[in-house]
Image 1 (cartoon, rainbow, N blue to C red):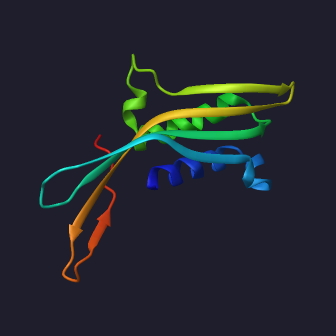
Image 2: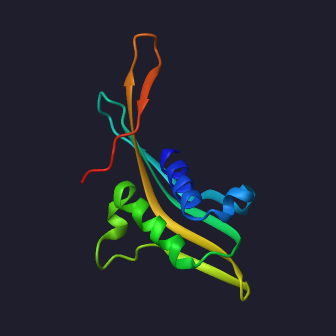
Image 3: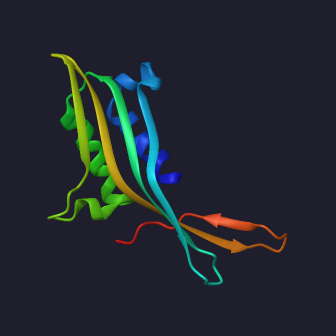
Amino acid sequence: MRKLESLRAAIFAALPELKKDPDRIRVWIERGTATSTQTHSRALTFKFQANVLIVEMASDISVLFLAVFEWARVNQPELMVVGTDGLAFDADILDSGAADILLQLQLDQAIAAQPTQSGGYAISFPAEPD
């Protein structure tokens, strides 16, 4: 899914420590749903909880959250609305220099699918509305 790929890239850019050991970040989906409409465009939407686990993170957790919220401004702006829950997280403090951090974000991914002449579909991912 495009959003998960771009979220992962934003976290990698913010936390240089992950470049040395990229297996320390794990991303998966829980409680996903898919909906579709009866329109000609065959549009569909995935809604899901994205889980991002960063193992033995030594960076300041504020750097991580800043990167995620900067990503959300473009990709999931409703996480930025005052009065909403934002994103959930758990932290397992390993020692004074590292922690395992689990982020839990409620995301959605819109998908447009246009039938092609060859019988398949042209898939696109519309940008989030402003």
